[in-house]
Image (cartoon, rainbow, N blue to C red; front, side, top):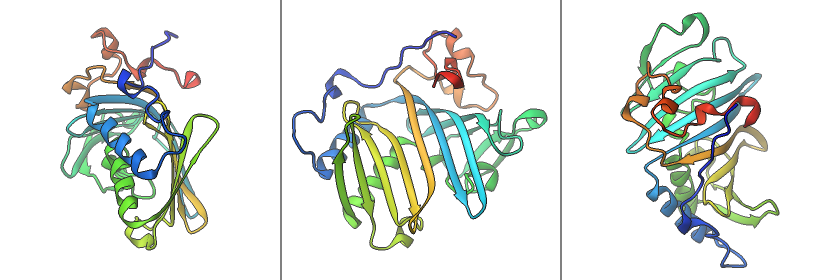
Length: 242
């Protein structure tokens, strides 16, 4: 398997949190917001897990984003029927175009972004899974929640947010987001319904500003073609190499 170089930050962001012994939530929000504003496109490997009652969803996804808000998700591995091999694209607005995996792959459908075919089992939509959404969640907590910050030994800041009214936070009583101290990018999050974790996401192998083409955000575009175009791609990373 070809090893792909993973680009995670521009030089101006290297060591961006290092100058202060302790960093406030306000500073973290300022830096991650500025970081997002510098990015034109990004790719990453997304591990998504969620539960609702006895139902569990567990997926490994290649995630692509290009401003203003084009998103593509290719499910490499999923625990639900026809999950593996599924793809979906979002180009703003209220619809998603996608197809299931396996024998259903030839059939592409356009559905509401809120349709069960286009969301997680907790109803998470395409545009609630990107960096912009992370920034918006942090902005919400800045205005509304009790927030604590801890610096962990593995080079991340752990930001714990507890809103006074979970109903205004998608029913979530607590959000925990881990931010890489060097790249100012999120690496992991957990969301709690009461005291129970019901949603997790892990982002790895970020590739920033590779020059993703508009064609990638059409459902029948094959991401394997990115390497043929000389574009560094998360598609080249095998699941076992994440």
